[in-house]
Structures are given as C-alpha cells and as structure tokens.
Length: 212
Picture 1 (tube, helix red, strand yellow):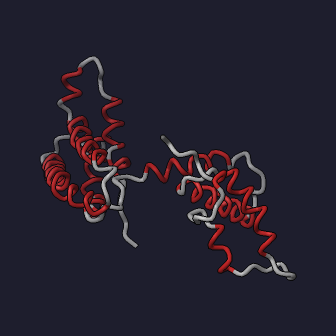
Picture 2 (cartoon, helix red, strand yellow; picture 1 turned 135 degrees about the vertical axis):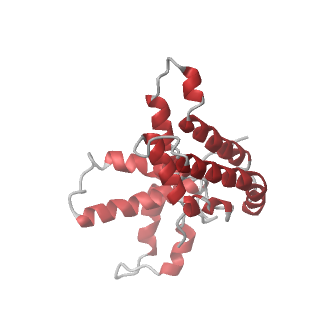
C-alpha cells in the first residue's frame, strides 16, 4: 500500500489565510505567502487537468516533464519561506507551510504513477451522500447494520463507475440472483461473473444512455 497525500488538503490552510486577509488591500493579499502558494498549486492543477484524458503512461510522462519541476520549485520555495520566518509559524499560512514540508514525500507520490490522482476529491464526493444520509437512514445504530449498508453502497458506487444506472442494476440482480440458487439457497460464485457491474451480459436498461 502506498500513501499518497491530497493536494486539495495541502492548499486548505493557504486558502483559509487568503479568505481571512484584509480585502481592502488587494495588493497586500496578492503579495502574501499564502496567495503565492495557492497560485503555484493552481498551476499543478491546471496542467494535470489538461492530462485528464490521457492514458496513465502518457499522463505520467507529462507529469514528470511538466509538473515535477514546478513541484520541486514549490517545495524549495516553501522551505525558504519557513527558514526565513516570512510568516508566524502558528498562523494559518505558517501551519500550511509546515504541513506541506513535512508531507513532501507523500504529496509527490502522484508524480510516480499516472493512475494516482492529484487529490482525493473524487473519493470524498463519492462518500458525501452516504455520510450525510447515515444520520437519517435506519439500521445504522449497530455494527451489522452499518456493515450491510456499506456493502450495498459499495455495489452502488461500483455500478456508477461502470456507467450503470444503480436502480435498474439493483432491480436486475435482485431479480436474477434467486435463479442462481440451488435447493439449499447456495450460489456457485463462478456463476456471479455475469452479474458483476462490468459484465458484458448485463441488459441495456442497466446502462446509462450513451452520449452521441
């Protein structure tokens, strides 16, 4: 397992500092360490967004060529700011510098693998509905209930990743699963391959309409 840190979290302290800055003095804001940090990180994102549609191998090559030098420059700059005590260490900007410096190796991991995203925003968006809904859904007051809901949610999210419509997919597998049961109610795992979210045998109604 490889720990890859999230640049969206790395920029958060700097964003907080800019938000709290005196907006009546825009020049002061734009020359601040926090603003400069955000601008440098924004350039990583701008380039990485351009690489979104590339195969992982090509994306990695482009990251190494175009983004890595910027990342190296960012960390050299951040360490210089911290060494010169350009900002109070306990300020939000100071905390941001301290965080990125100590997490440097983990924040660079996305430069070593084209499949590793620059942040985990997609994962957070995927679980947001679940985290909000669990306050209102039933059966979350026991470990077994939480386990059962996590299982269902995992199937739902996997269906989405395979361009399926979760409602129709659930309806299909719940209709088909009883047909696979023997007299004792057991199912041969090998027979489940054609029910998986990535199976080609799934009916067309389970799939999202293709864009023209």
